[in-house]
Length: 259
Image (tube, rainbow, N blue to C red):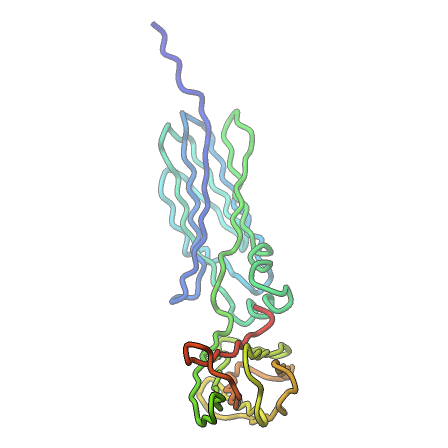
């Protein structure tokens, strides 16, 4: 009776997750042997936009019998062999530059394209096997500015309410919104009077106060000056709105067009 060994093959996966508390993207590469293989080679190329992500070579952790060499944008790993069911796991991190990321989001009209521009490609092979690769884009990273909104009815005449709305854009001051428009759209009602925009820095100090005249329609757009820094914007406005059938007023939508 002759037992033939299982033909060797390799399988690989790559995973990227965002650690918001530490400001890093964590990568995990897992290469698994399917049968016995020899002279395993794993190459990881980090296609990062300049300044957006920076690989931290000191963060590299290796599980399994591999040795690795690193550069600023690559990992090159080797193992003499990998048995059936055995794995080599690589863990490493890249630090995110918030301001560079936000600039990339703005110039690429959204987070999705930034992820595609910051892909990692892992190529893996072994003796007698054809080279294969697996690609992982940068994960969706929520460092773009958020919005907080609240409203209070300050007057009511019949079924028409006057509502004072407050929207705070980029309250965390995570990055600059310079050169981007802030858009506010009413689902119901009309603007009443001027719209006040109070500009504050990360310390909460007021650095500017701006006024936008009430637009004739249901939307106003305020272009953030190109010279603005990491500021937040407190927007106050009066809205005349009809009650809905359930007695509640519709909330206007505020957005940054680059997200």
